[in-house]
Image (cartoon, rainbow, N blue to C red; front, side):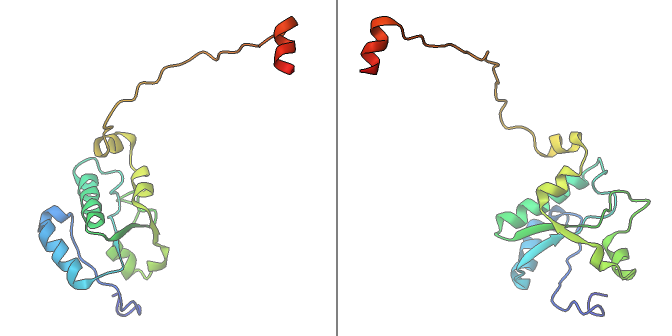
Length: 150
């Protein structure tokens, strides 16, 4: 399909996660293809998925970045599995131009807060103390004022 659309410089690796085929296999494919960047195209509903899909996407992104690839996520508003198309369906419909590349951080912000906490647990818990605002005024009177101003 991509070939018919004139997109001759795009290779597609279908994987649910690097862990499914194995990180070594994904790395081998990427080394052979030598891409300028890697685009992850999550299925429709991936941001709402509460199972292992968000972790699998995160794992794949992290591996590709660790190998030195610039990684972006294709997003065409596919937040709902029932209402939106997967990437292959989007291509067949001739709607490739609807997909925009966004940074992984922006993609994960589209996930529910509970999913983000699971994917990115805090490494430390900073303690914030509320300090009362201290205000004071210095009054220079008499001799002290004259000593300072001379």
